[in-house]
Image (cartoon, rainbow, N blue to C red; front, top):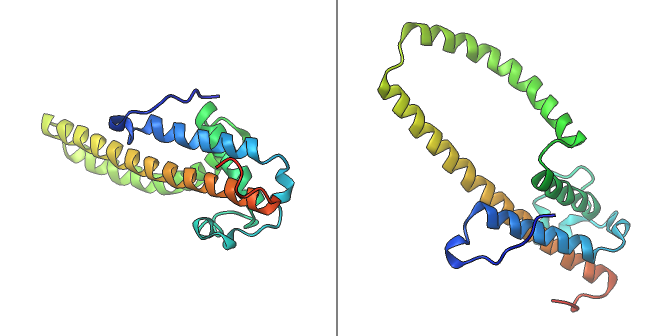
Length: 168
């Protein structure tokens, strides 16, 4: 389990703190939800914050989303070496191989006609920095949404079992 550290205002937007907030919210959800099976067949669409997830979750109920949030927490804490993650990776590799075989042949022909200069290296470094910033921003945004949804699921569970006002 990842240790939660107090965040300073300057660190509010750090990836580490976004992960910390998400893991804390999922840990709280996990500790609060003593009987996860009560979430089965409880639709997401009653909750505005969670209704947008319905198409992404197979069964479209709170239980499946509870499982998804816990799975994402595990991936963050331990890496994506879980069986489900390996399966997703294999599926994406099939798609990538099909797409990349065409791009490999086109990039091979273009790279043979041009030589790399130091300008190209600098451009490549800028591209890497832009890619990193893009993905970092996206990851922080996704983690923020997942944190809100873990908190929402916890609140909704409390309402379902009749302890809505406790411990808030």
